[in-house]
Length: 222
Image 1: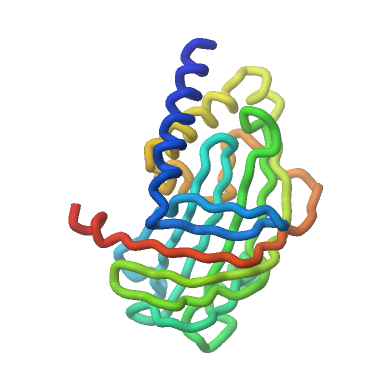
Image 2: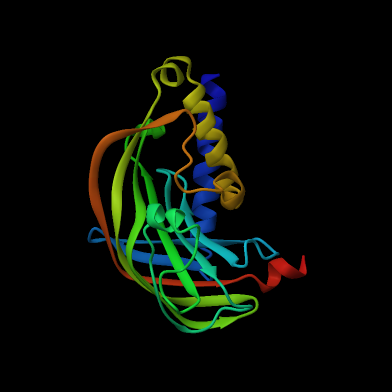
């Protein structure tokens, strides 16, 4: 088991290094004053749901696990340039995903990072406030800027998961998929942490100078 875990880590590290060199599609930002940038992926549900369209963009690092997500909900047939509000997730759910503004689009921006070696805890930023500006958009690409303040929350592994090692194995499995470029499959939600629970500790996470550019034309041709 120990040899298998080491092998998985080595594979993940190698894949992470290779992917870091591919920065045509990226999300970057200053997170609490620390510069960060990673290759970005896109998840698009190819049908309308409850009268809105949904597009998720996310950038991933593997060791440690760091993710920055931008999720766009729009009530039009296509994305259009403009500045749009970042929503508070809890408030958005109370309104049953109805937009607060009349722009026809709103965004969620979320963040998560490991807080201890091997992923025994996570420090997350839940979408709260700010703006996303789309500077260019086509049917197969989008780019723009963003900034905002996130509600900081903390997760820790459940005792049984730590003792049995099941939490560690789950983390390694996700790292392997993420490192291979399947981060959007392994992490459908930025705050879905296997065998973990949210603690009562909170703070805030400030994101400034955010930029993103994602083109999925090649993906659609495959």
